[in-house]
Length: 210
Image 1 (cartoon, one colour):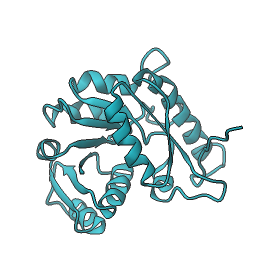
Image 2: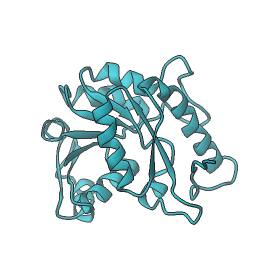
Image 3: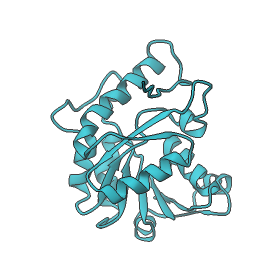
Image 4: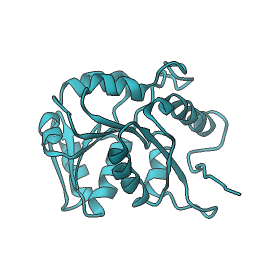
């Protein structure tokens, strides 16, 4: 599968590298595809990885992971052009700059805004509820780590579920894209526990069923 990464920071770099090492063709989008940081990321990801300008990355990809800071997301999407028909995995959260909370309440979500900003894209919310360290290694002694996803396109969700599962997570369908309204506050719970209340970043959530 051809996967593009829009936002090659910690989350995008980690997921893109793991998918490339799993055999997918991964293109890291960048405003400076020949820059030192991007070249280092491509080298670490291995032979299945490459870099390109953001618009070229999007054009070449079947799936695009969106992992930009919330404040930069709308502009980043404008810069990639038409995403009609492509699967757009939204891993963003509408965080306040000081990480004290979210800039959106429960009446809408970043996921729904992304769908508005990228009309025609098949948006699936995922990879927003744990930190990149857990994404790099989701193996815990207590069992599989939960990764919730939501969206309105059943086929796109099935594809994303596969990309989630191959990284070692338990892929859990949370319903339609409006469920991003609760997944984003759920992410805020993880973030607040990790950075403010002493739990650190090396923990995750799992689903226990009776």
